[in-house]
Image (cartoon, rainbow, N blue to C red; front, side):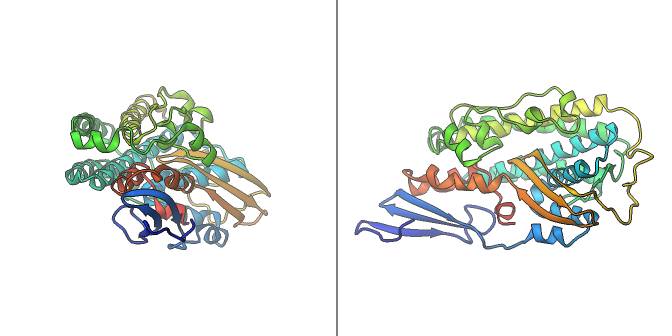
Amino acid sequence: MDENVGPSEMIVHLGPQHPMQPGPFRLNLRLRGETVVDAEIELGFIHKGIEKILESKTYLQGIPIVDRICYLTAMTNEEAYVGAVEKLADIEVPERSQYIRVILEELSRLQSHLLGMGEFGEFIGFVSMFMYTIKEREDILSLMDMVTGARVTHTFLKYGGVRGDLPEGFKERSAAVFAGLREQIADYRKLFNDDEIYKQRCFGVGILEAKTARDLGVSGPALRATGVAFDIRKDEPYLVYKDLDFKVCTATDGDIAARIEVRLDEMLEAMYIIEQCLDQMPSGPLFYEDSPYGVRTPVMRVPEGDVFHRVEDPRGEMGFYVVSDGSDKPHRVKIRGPVYPTMQALPPLITGTTVADVAAIAGSMDGCTSEADR
């Protein structure tokens, strides 16, 4: 963005520390009065170095590292990384373990959407919405805790299976939590759509066109809100998603309200997926008996080769490109996360809007700076 401003213009920097967006990044706005005439996004304030860290760790040591790419998507990060290595090493996962993985990854989608919805509510002045969603999120985290022993970062997936089985009473507890959450989602929808301020600030504002989204590589709910029904769980099924009945949630308007609507619908579908898994999950082992990559494997060497594996995380396409040189550490790791392309869509979305719209539009995109700046 050219910082040479005219006499009626000014440059305003939002960030790198700003309540508009969790995580440090800077949004530079060129304003003419209250109108945004140009915008630029700056990342690079975190410097995690996750990819290089993974290259210095063994394959087993890498699993807890990928949890920390974005704590809201720890389970799907594990699935993308572990799934890539399983492809490289030709490791098969028993069906029961696949079902358990799906259950946990859909629970992860629920808690991520709940937190994102609450934060978005704060951005538009709906402060009480965060209190509502964070309460329901705690119930979802408690379900995950029952299985993994952790609430946020889990290190639960293992090559060829999972670390443990579902505990006794998990299905009954899930049913009780889901019954309450379905009622709450109906209330959220009513709270949003019946509110005049929400209608004025979110309908027809921040419209993302389908072509722009595809050109920038945007995926997940932000893409599906433009009418593009792309979901890796359907288009390139992994685990047991091909055996499950669920719909890809879409909207057509591409505005703030459409993005919120898609996430509300996805939460309902996530619960439906989990209930199917609990009903049709077969008995059987968590690891195949002849698997050389069980829970107690001290050293794991992966055959030479390279592979790209992607999954549908709560924000879109999360993919890992892993290169093996035959040792116990990956030679190269490259992560393709969903948030960096989504954040590149922010400048064209907010150009032409007003300063008051910026926080609402950014919040509706549900970014995670930690994941983009890895």
